[in-house]
Length: 159
Picture 1 (cartoon, helix red, strand yellow):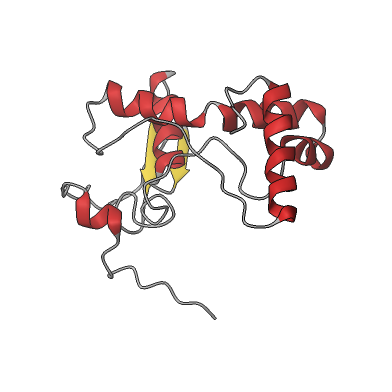
Picture 2 (cartoon, one colour; picture 1 turned 60 degrees about the horizontal axis):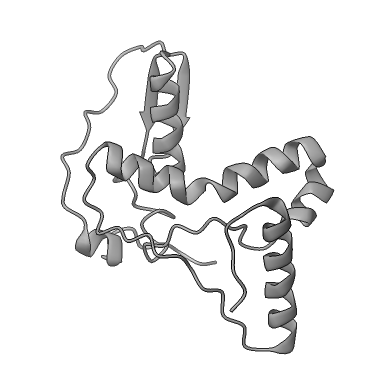
């Protein structure tokens, strides 16, 4: 079994400014929305809920951004890691699939927008992303992803 060593510094921890920890929860609390996980997705969900006027509590068992958000090499990619947009729709249906694909396509814009809105110095650069392919099979898969994201309306280019 793979064990994660949360104490070993990785790129995010080496380059991010230290932030004071939030106070531990004490006593009984009531909230409209409880968000579990203080990574990019959890923090964006908590901020969106707060902006809509509801009471939000965000729980993180470690440091903010310490797990997947901190271990992703600093990349914010608007793309499913393993499925194409059509494959996602085939599993979850057209309505949910389209909604989720739109959320994924807009993810980098949301992340960079939050960084700008809250003046977060994350050494962010929004210059695009390249998907390399090292075999004919991965090249065909990259082409499929490109064609489907282009048909979906995403801003993609084939190089």
